[in-house]
Length: 244
Ligand code: 4HQ
Image 1: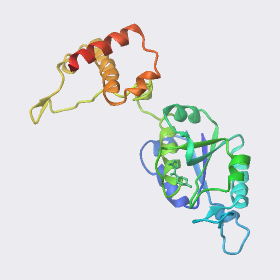
Image 2: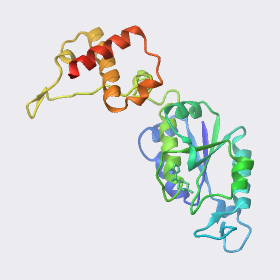
Image 3: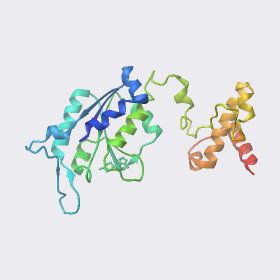
């Protein structure tokens, strides 16, 4: 997959491929990340890309023309690509979005600074407006880097253990089960017996029950969106009974 990030801080965004899964995805040839700076498409001698908002008020707005020129150049280099703008006004980015975007051949991620983009660029060029959550960042770069990270680990062949993405938190719309490693006793706290039993079917069942139970405890609203089968409902019922 090819990703172009349009940003006033290209050196910042490029850091995302220096570590972890995005780095591996690049090394394996599954991900190609490039950046494009709207300043390089500014037509004034100061390389200015922002201006004061019509109607007045504080802050600056990113001008349409250099952004549109940068998007055109990115499209020319990628071929088919969806354009994503990161902003608090967007739909909430989640694992389903990560899965959907990871299946695209190309993506153009638009990063805004200041008060954001001229609205006409959104209308003319943006396919999806996505938000990481209800908070305000100083620019879209960190959000774009989060999107790149979440996508990179889903690309075919990137996760060492092919099963890992399937077993992940959210792959079934549930939270992850708890994890334990050595030592067997730490500050008097022990590892659940079942995990030491060597009975793999029993362990898988315990983990599924824990995923259901932890979701019920920590994020109950996630269960509302799920159609649980009878066996899962029984596992969750037993988990809840044990909590009392
Ligand atoms: N910003 N999720 C404002 C965000 C943001 C978010 C990016 C700050 C866009 C103009 N992006 N600029 N939350 O707060 O994605």
